[in-house]
Image (cartoon, rainbow, N blue to C red; front, side, top):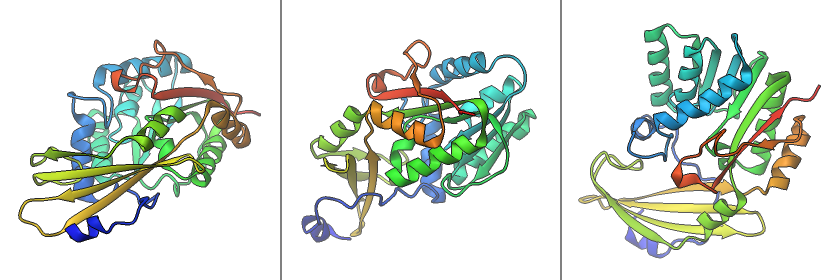
Length: 281
């Protein structure tokens, strides 16, 4: 692309033109953000994750439970749970995050395994005591994909097992789609979308009929004529929508966790909802 391509761009942006999660360099920059203790944006800071895993461990009780973490990133949750003796499997699309998680588990001899895979395609025949899908990743998929992911999660969960889903609220997704266009600059290595100093132009779109928010990013770098475009999308669900999805997948009616049970971190207060359910017999 070049500057004229931005000027002549088609609006609204096309949804589901995913970010390059499996690109090695993109995943390396994303990993740095996962591990940062300066913010809670890619992953939460260590103290919040520790409090959330404390709740999971208390709910599961003593003993060794089998845990599946979908979109596990660098294994920050599974690592803490494996330290308690739980047998964990994490699945993620990011090569840098999976390599990091494997290295930590192997170095400490923990009962945690990690698979590099698109969670939409991953299959196994194992039964788990807990399946978790946290930090709003669920909303990044189309409605059809999201429903299929929930159904697959239910199949992997033993009857009576614990399912944890942390999703964006409908109002948060709509707010993102209606946000005004903006721009910002990044120094080298500071941004996710480029390793070089760059300027990012961002615009947002809200599809009321589909309840989908789309964000489009244009990346401009000094000394390069090329302009790169990236898009991300979020699907909005009301609490009733989540309840219907859970019922269709074979889960019990979801229960929402409060801030003491599952602290979201200051940037996400009122922006996220964490739901738990059991698999029905």
